[in-house]
Length: 109
Image (cartoon, rainbow, N blue to C red; front, side, top):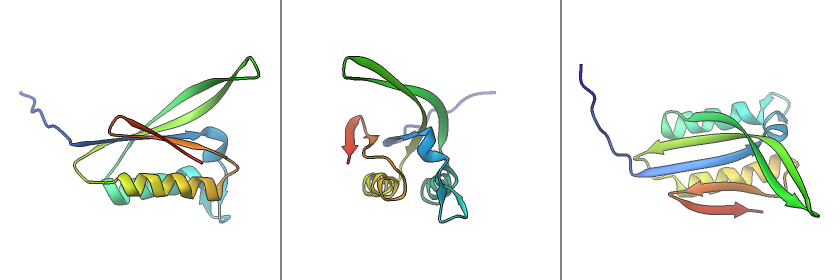
């Protein structure tokens, strides 16, 4: 049994605070479920990892649980990923969302 090597030309990551992901979207579904549906519709799938994000605020370390969505694809999706960052800002209590598009960090606020 062999393996095949396939190179995918685009790599996207979207970091969603877990509190935001569990918020309800229009009283019907969670932000997380809606986002996952969007990724499946656009790219055919995603990899989801739970992690902890940390930063310094007033000389103290702040940590929060996050969900990292990781997508490898040949489909162009830079505008789609940025639009979903804006969608997260409009539909959650977050003031900033971070994504990585082909190794370039974008902080959307």
